[in-house]
Structures are given as C-alpha cells and as structure tokens.
Image (cartoon, rainbow, N blue to C red; front, side, top):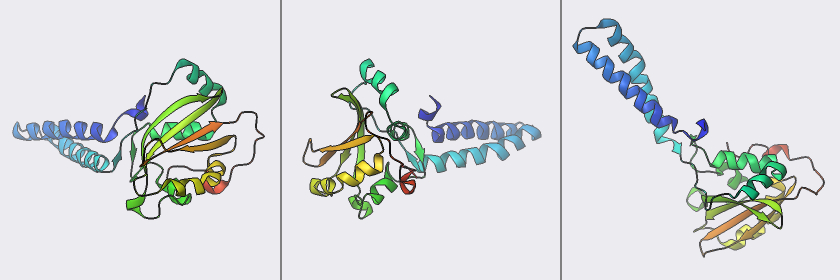
Length: 197
C-alpha cells in the first residue's frame, strides 16, 4: 500500500503545513514554534519539491487482473516477474523512465529520444501459464529491432520464463513474459540482476 503513495506530494504538503505554522508562530511571537516551523518546514517543503520534480508515476493496468490469474501469480510468477510488477506499479524517484537501464542493456534505447516508453501492464494466463504483459510506446524503434533482441530478453528476464513479442498497433510493442514453471532452473546472469536502477 505504501509503495503506491506519492511521497513527493506528502513531503510537499507536510512541509507546507509546518512552514505555515512557523510563519504564524513568528507573527504571534511564539519563538520555539517559530524555529520548529522554519527549521523543519522549509527543508521538508524543498525535499517535497525535489521529489516531485524527479517523480516517475506508476504505470496503469490495461485490464483488471482476474482471481484466476492472481492465483497463477501466487504459484507460478518468478522473482523477476514479481519484481517488475512491483517496480512499475509504484512511484519511483530519480529515474527518467521505467526500464531505463534494462532497455539500454538490451540495446533498445540507442538514444534517450528513441527510448520506448512503458505505457501499461496486464496480467493474464497463456495456456495456463502466468504471463506479465508490458505495453510499450515504440514510436522511434521499429518492431524488427525488438524481434532481433527477443532471445536476449528471454535470457535477461529468466530463468523460468520465455518472451513473446506482438505489435497491437503500428507504434506499440507488447512484451509478454510467460512463466515456464516446468523448465529447468538456470543461474541468472549477475550483470542483469537489478532491473530498475
């Protein structure tokens, strides 16, 4: 629950309230309250502004996850699928985009302007296997480039998954990360252990 709270807005609000109290205390000649208001309120307020400027909002779900798919998530989702879902559905700070470093590693972000943008996610079942689907706006990167990186994506998001690609619209790409619970477990590449940094 707390991961979905906008901490930038909370700090901004708290800092604003404490600063206003400090100003009121100054005008009413309450020295102790005045000092607390200025020493805590202004830094909180400025911290809130800094967080708000670097805030990366959670991506929305395309469709509501059904109870059947939730049950599949509990039994089949890999650590990587769970981490991705948790990372992209919460507020993040200090990043320009979701999957910034992952897209660079995969060769899908040659320059910042061409970096695909994660627009939405959904969870579904693919022939009884838990599937996490990521929908990207890929206006500057052709679908052929994505297909060339499909095997690398499978290795990156693995072990225990396979990746399928689709193009629902001309400038969109869907990356389906499908759990393969019956596949042998391999050792993940330590170089790609952290997805969102």
